[in-house]
Length: 114
Length: 112
Image (spheres, rainbow over the protein chains, first blue to last red):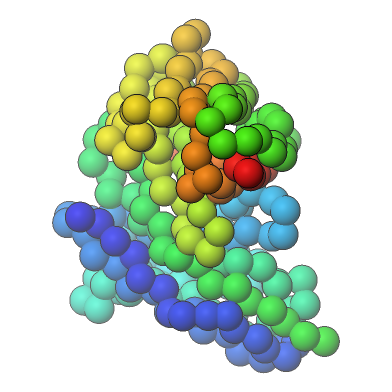
């Protein structure tokens, strides 16, 4: 079945440091890929997405590129802020007609210190 | 901005009791999802509705869980009887066909 694997956490960085969070996936066909963010006490918010190979999703300074050859969708940000502290989830949607459920990775907690 | 509403936000119940959660999706969204998120894990789909019909409930423990969306708008997820292992965050999401899923704030369930 479909699956998403995220790097182990947690991750602690100083403000303005470079961020990379690794994500690889296993799926049949051509899934859409997503990064969701969850702030403390809140639901999930879509951060960015990519729907086909070589697409780059970007939002709020975060970027991720859909790499079909390596089945990866790594999240990057050039300079993190304290306000980026949250849990980040990589996810895929199989795009199989009516069933468009999301399959999530385990998530990784990012803490940014001033 | 339209949001997915869920209630209650927090629920504490004793083992073997019944518990119910409610979700009101964004107006006009035909697809509604219930996910369960165990602490330290990513959300997992329990049930997906398209209008009032169930599209996928393959991961729903049907001996104790039930879900309905009678008029194709709001939805209720019920657990009876609750077990200790049901302690988790229950998330509702909605979407238009094939579009982005919008998540509610979730219901945090603690079973004692």
